[in-house]
Image (cartoon, rainbow, N blue to C red):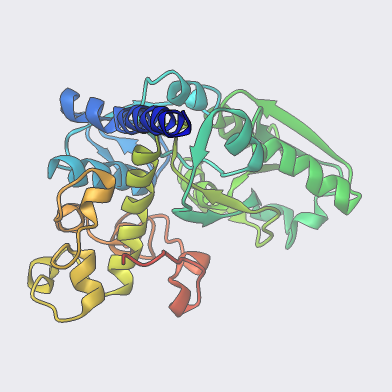
Length: 340
């Protein structure tokens, strides 16, 4: 009787395990069958996600979407971008409208534990800041006593703003708008003394102002804003694929594997490079892909450093210094687990 009970339990576990495996592969299977990745993006943020008049998308976040498509299809163009507002972005993931959201979205505990979503890993370390008119002569955000501040409502930015002035014991007037575009326009028209959002976005939004050179981004960073991809709960394989695509880009930069030399690096004797590129080991199988999945990514979009330089770096209009987004061994905190 005991043996029979154990056999039944074992069979049940086997069936349950098969069910879990089938469920965990659902998103990747759907993407492959559909032939295109559905990626949620910003409606338009310079350097991160912008569509031209022909509907061609470019930007830092866009490149991460294309990296996933390259890993799956060996084609970075098999992506449909869905421009999403801050208000609608999480619903689009929850409903299955998009397979992944890569849209300057901060990883917070509440978002990670109450929305049925998984976030991570961090692909950009940011922090909230302020932009003001140079004519005000301000050197610090702590000099904004009694100032009016334009901010997008319903975001972590609005909460951080309130926290900062509360802790600093400074009075201010929040002026909220439904979208970042409206908030920037209001600031540009003189409705507010300052505008606040993520520091990276401040450099992008500054370019839209009537007279960009009349404005300055203050040095204060008042929050931690780790940006991360977002997927639905319950599909571990898909989460692993999105997560390890980010890690692959970071590891490739650390190991010196670039868009230009990836094919030559296939001959490398470095075991870390060989595992990264699928020459040794069987790591692609773990995320439901072929062994050359990282080769596909780097060949089409480059490594993390190349993506940053092309879209946000010092030779772009945004001219953002890498700062915290430098590799861990180059003064930053960007770090990826090893492929082994």
